Image (cartoon, rainbow, N blue to C red):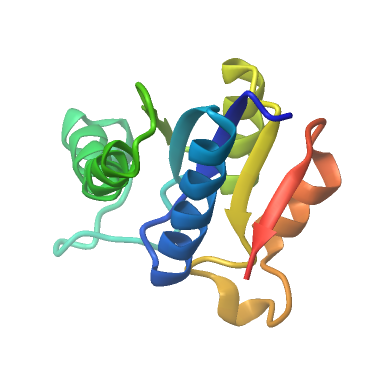
Length: 149
């Protein structure tokens, strides 16, 4: 059925449920697993203590900060995949993309035949029933999407 599953996570409690369900499905199917987290672009209006924002997003410090934050999400997800019995799970961090774009691009790059994600993530308050990034993936994905609530 599904041979390569991409599981999207943002580290939220709901995303952990999606990760668990995606891993459970992968184990049952003997599928390969890729786990992705996306760091969205630096938002306009974010300033440091001195009131400056220009240039930070181009700095090595910015990239390292974003990578460190991503690894805090991906490392436990990878450990959960190994503990669940997934053979050779892979992790991916997509920098400076909106979640939907990063998820869809990663699915294509990994040759995924299923995307597992949750109904909303950190920005779920703005969309009560279905998160905006989830809706975007559903609308644009060329592969099936399993949405976990």
